[in-house]
Amino acid sequence: MAFDTMFLKAMTEELTEQCETGRIMKIHQPFAHELILHVRKNRENQRILISAHPSYARIQLTKETMENPAQPPMFCMLLRKYMEGAIIESIRQIANDRILIFGIRGKDEIGETRFCDLYVEIMGRHSNIVLVDREKETIVDCIKHVSPAFNSYRTLLPGAAYILPPSSDKLDPWNVNEDALLAKLDFNAGKMSKQIVANVAGFSPLLANEVVARAGLVNRETLPQAFFSVMEDCAKPAEPNLFTKHEKEDFYFMRLADTEITAESASLGALLDRFYGGKATRDRVHQIAHDLERLLANEIDRDRLKMEKLAQTLVDTERADEFRVFGELLTANLHLVSRGMTEIEVQNFYDENMGTVTIPLDIRKSPPQNAQFLFNKYQKLKKAVKFVDEQLRLTEQEIAYLETVQQQLEDASPEDVQEIRMELAEQGYIKYKQKKRKPETKSESHTRKIYVKHWFIDFSR
Image (cartoon, rainbow, N blue to C red):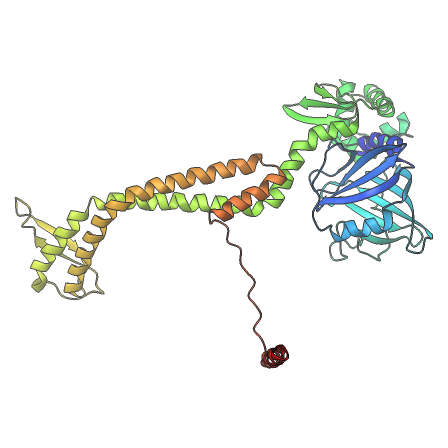
């Protein structure tokens, strides 16, 4: 994980420098799990992106602009009530954890000073954004509600007491000494990076692997040296960079061993904009266009099945004359057929050698009905030849069109999705259902008639 505790520490320093003591001017919630705080400090405007997305949870300064919904969500409206115009008094990180706290000082409805804290929990799919009343220590609201049925230890609902996630008894990497570190590690127990993650607070697998890489030949002498070397670099000013390792692109706030740096950024915010920009946009498009993706996939599958049926029909048309012959032979031998027979073998007088042919029969039909069925099948197949080729051509064109729209959706921005939706509606692929009017009760109908009657009387006067 690249956005680990140490990365959040570096990000906290960047946010503190740019936004602490600043005033929150606007708050937007462009997507379900993301907030944008517009902060003004020293005559400069900053945008803080806070995301509780299950895959892209993070907090950063961003330069990207996002389109806001016409109607702000309820959580956004509540944050505006408590935080718009307020001062960010402090930005602090809970030690060795991925939780950031904004200390907010604002005004209530009658102008009294009000203090609250905004907790940003960066914990993967359990990420959350929680507004807490500092005096009462209760939750005002959170972007994701967690009921007691889901988590008996922490209830994240309005009015509940705010409780931090349970702490661990891991070593504090900033205050540990060599003896305490070695006492927690077993050099004969397997992969050392996993042991570091399990015993040292705030260490992600990425950072633990960095310790092992710097140690080289891992032993009781090289490992502590590598560990304290990594901690020294964690305390230095950030050097944001994108890198590749094992053909996978990632990011970090400092240089790592055995990695190939692909790009460097002036700030952590710019680094995350560059890394998450395309990924987050694609995910947003998927969220708002999921129904369109499913619609296109279903339509394409349906057309491909139609192509298969048309191709089979085209093959069957080649047997049209065979059904005509069967019908005529059966008509000539109706006296030999009785209800309940599954087939009959008759002499084929169309064959030069006067051989026999077996005609399949439907036991549910009488002999004349079986003969008529064969003639109808012949007529149907003869007529099919005229339009099957045209239907194949039209279906191929439709598949090509739908695949083009599908590709456009892959590359679309959130703003393009609405245009694609309108185009599909114009082509008839989307039908908007109008709400049916609720039937009137007898009393409502009577009241309406009286009202209309009196209205006409008044109008005539």
